[in-house]
Length: 252
Image 1 (cartoon, rainbow, N blue to C red):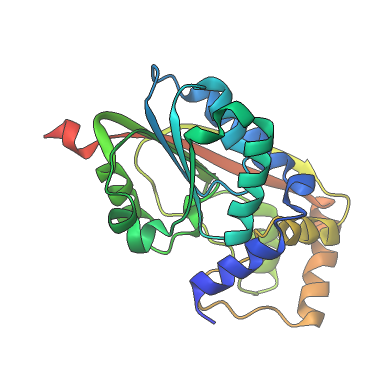
Image 2: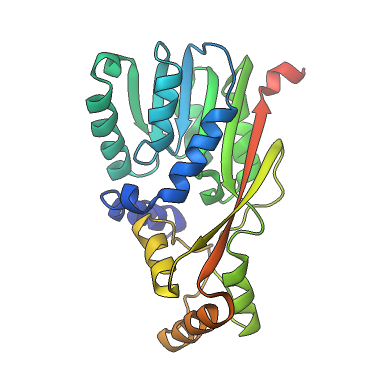
């Protein structure tokens, strides 16, 4: 199974449970929304809208804009469409919903330009993030901006330290150094147990490993979970980075 199919499948399976376990994702969406200060954009594109956490906030912020909401998962996109059209019935004529993989068809599927492009907790799923960011910037109007949030290099450092101490590989998809970073934050979360930590990742679809990763055997996983609880009390740190990029055409 290739990487894209695996990501689609995992997020599709978590569409119904996502909102109940996405406390961090919701907090990050609110923080990202507060950083967006562009004045009255006419056309807004969201990449990786998921179930519509950030979508809800951005509609409230710019009620007269036209929105294109995209995701790689059909079930996630359907969930977002049902939620947003129900919550904002007077504005649903301003909504467009599309399946989109920005790594493959950003240019082909989005010929139009956008005043604002947003993405919360999605770009770390790209295999080639830096080139994908360039494609996204190319879809901005000359004065447009792209605002994003993603996990940072220190995300779940306790889990990685635990695995490293046992000489086990980890499957976390940690992004490279990214352009336009304007804010970092660390959010410690007490999960109560290693099992609850891993369950939360699964029920939000956030358990797709990096390409080529070989999952731990059951005995190795149980050993790592036990050591995580012993050394860190199942407290894990989310490291979140926020960025802002302008249109490539504005730099010419």
